[in-house]
Length: 356
Ligand SMILES: [Zn+2]
Image (tube, rainbow, N blue to C red):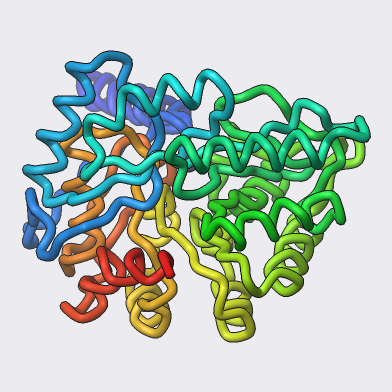
């Protein structure tokens, strides 16, 4: 009897420790490993040649550039578009490094917004844009507006309150059309980042880190930002626009579908949104198949071999229920299993099309 009592107490104690431990695990620390015994693919080389339309200046030395080229060769990446965001001397020094790898890398420049607020703004932006074009820039990007005005990633020159459909942007878009320079534009953030950090936020782990503070001064809402961008695309049919990260519309791709249907000058890259897409693989397959001639492959995530392999797993396989460390969602992912014709377009053919 005494033994049974001790055993019972021990059991209750163990149960309470277990319950305490599991309730103490934070959602952000949850890093599950799939235990399903199902096919696991490791695709080291893309099935078709690839143009990576969305990357940045990651290397910090020539040997890292060389390493990148090796990784590109192994993965089947023919060409990488470097959305440098730079102008001026910074852009020129990139030209001197990357012109040696002319066939593998392509430099895009930023916009010189330093005269924003002065009468000289338009003249300064346009003359620097023309200069960068002459120096070798093939496009403009990445230009960002997350609600407080246009800014260039990797530079600190935000033009507060200058949104994408501001008349001051008109001569810039028209100059880009004239020079045959597409613009890569980052609009807003994924929709989860606009939702409150509560128990029903579907993307809470990322929202807690990247959430948009809608109480900030003069900040625009998600819908306003999409409207500004839509106006720009509509008002400048000669200009080629690339909405990066699927226009941050993963939660509702009908927004992007409608814009694709209305505006032949609009494209979108899929970079850095595999995590947001791998939760709805069948829908993605239908969407990517329908709009393959408007969608561009992109990575936006360094230059490691593993990074490329992960993207190919999403694009080419029907693998299910896998996790990718660093993506920051609590859900598992599945591949899109894209047909050959769709892969060819998204990897390569659509990219060729945007250079008229
Ligand atoms: Zn980027």
